[in-house]
Length: 357
Image (tube, rainbow, N blue to C red):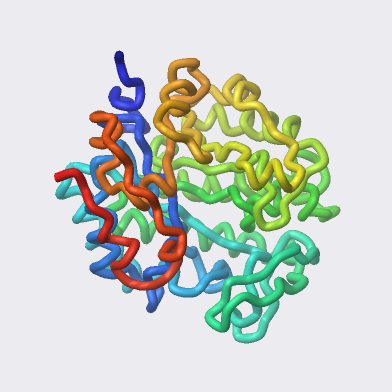
């Protein structure tokens, strides 16, 4: 039987050997917020993926919300990431960097006691992951209108740093309840200025960031990640299908490398998600569509067979199986991921999962 996952695909200017994408995975293995040699080993082990999308990387100190995560806004960060891109390229792999600003999903501990920023002063339910352990989220400070261009400039600077670091492209993180997603949804955005209210206004910030990043990279090397059905980080919207279909229609003419959609997960459904059909987004977006969200091999083959997506990204399966492409090809048994070592720590549960060879 022909494997759709194992068939080549062109994403942006790159001819990739398969449609098996490594999803962006926060692992908190950068104690000084600069990529390490251990991280280079981790990514190199997974270079047979059609495309690696790196863990989310903060575009500024204002965008930080987790300890021991990597940054991408100065020369030291570039030097660290260069080791990783070189290691992946030496194995003939391709890697995009994910650009990140967490917005309200942070804590004053990360900001010298200052409040995190958001489109509106609405506290998310839940807890921040800090160096002192879990702490309640606080009510963020609503961004002033004149502050927004500076954040767009931060995205552009981070995109330049990623280019200098040798990445093949970048992915703008517009998903999972972080800053750009907070602007998109009316559950977190109650602004009454040009960045709130109408679909056009709520999409404005993401589209401005996208234009700035395209100015550095060219559209064909820029991807965007969205989670239209997601409830993670206390996200909600009054009419997500109508809004995200509108947004997909706005993104479609830009000729991006891809749109990366996170499907509704079991936890989203449990928390009352309004599930958006993949078919509606596929119809609205004419470019390359990557999907992710708890896929196994059989379901991934099915979604490609049905033409609902062009490639599938895998998260936890890639944590535990550095040679996931080869295991899928051979229908070999899969290593099981150890959740206790997902975040923070050392090589254990990070670079010590066995490969077949």
